[in-house]
Amino acid sequence: MAKASNFLQSTLLPSSSPLRNLRSQPLPLSFPPLPSSRHRPITIHCSVSAGETTKRSLEEAPDISWGCEIDSVENATSLQRWLSDSGLPPQKMAIDKVDIGERGLVASQSLRKGEKLLFVPPSLVISADSVWTNGEAGEVMKRYDVPDWPLLATYLISEASLQKGSRWFNYISALPRQPYSLLYWTRTELDMYLEASQIRERAIERITNVVGTYEDLRSRIFSKHPNLFPKEVFNDETFKWSFGILFSRLVRLPSMDGRFALVPWADMLNHNCEVDTYLDYDKSSKGVVFTADRPYQPGEQVFISYGNKSNGELLLSYGFVPREGTNPSDSVELAMSLRKNDTCYKEKLDALKKHGLSTPQCFPVRITGWPLELMAYAYLVVSPPDMSNSFEEMAKAASNKSSTNKDLKYPEIEEEALQFILDSCETSISKYSRFLKESGSMDLDITSPKQLNRKAFLKQLAVDLSTSERRILYRAQYILRRRLRDIRSGELKALRLFSGIRNFFKQ
Image (cartoon, rainbow, N blue to C red; front, side, top):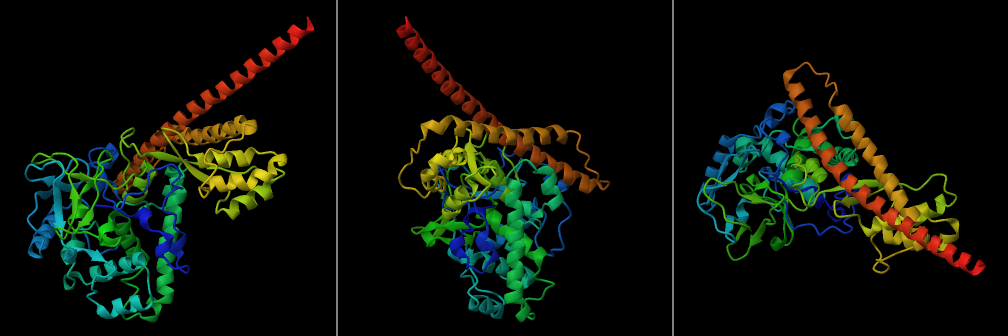
């Protein structure tokens, strides 16, 4: 399963933690609110490039002695047996290999729409309150008041390192040895394949923050207790693994006081962009459940939603890209910057900083349009010096902190603002087009068959992402051009009417 990146909120992390600055999502702007829980990668609507070649194409796993190949059904079947022996009620689903998601849960009998499924009891859920097998290590972590995410990452490594000595051995054995995640892309690969997409910056930032969080824990805690946290177990590679698991599998359960949790068995469910059902704790049945959003026949794969995420966000956390046009929540981040030669550059930058913005600043654009905040930012960029009294209002509106002026309009500079957005779109489109053109002849420069498969796989993911993001920008370009045409044709009509009246009075 998978579910996590967007819930790594700053409120969970102390100011001293490097993860405090981890960016969880683009500005929400006009997007619908985040779902309360998340879920795993799509299968039916996943890009074909993330199909059968996935296991073969991934780089050889790091030196992690636990977990399994990502398509291992045997380990997952052992997990189901262990869960049943540990109190999991009889299930109406079973683990099996699926068309694109490697492994998933399929209906073992007919399922009705609206039927509640899973019923994983709290005793089989991993959370910040879970008991550590190494109780002394757990006490040390809690003594330092480590927030949930770093605490859970450390807990997972601690339990994994104990192998059969941990209660969670069967669960950890069923986890992928190398999770799907951009955490496993090298900087060279990110620069080469994602040069056109803003997801590259998100991935670099995430990798930096994960490494920074490990270094923070190492210096503050691990180095002071080397007998409890030996470096051969607690290191940057194992933290990359544990955070990869959290980003792809952690859920927030609103009915359990918003607790963040790993839910064994439930995390075998795959994502479908057309599904709108999530995990939560059901107080009446006393288990984690989800409600089937449609009927399923025996043998059909059962899906849940990982949330309303763009293709880039799905690639970032889960390592897959849905097929173009199948994700109604898809968006692309458009970068916009103040003009360095603007005589009011400093005043505008100060106004942005006052409201938590910067330059460049990214805004999400969807196939249906762009948010009001983007327009406010464009107004600020193009506004002349004689509008300096409005800089503050524009910056506030661009930050999404203004409860008023949602219909902020400056007719005198609207054309210039729209032209600025169009120019930004076309600059971004040119980057995507250049990458897509060059990708066909890109030299992978690899001699190892395994590495060749990996590079080809990553390149295809990047092509799929670039194609879907460019498609959205093309749509925005069309809308902007038409709007500018209407404005200019209206101005021309007004000018002709004025000229006609003037000529009339000259007669």
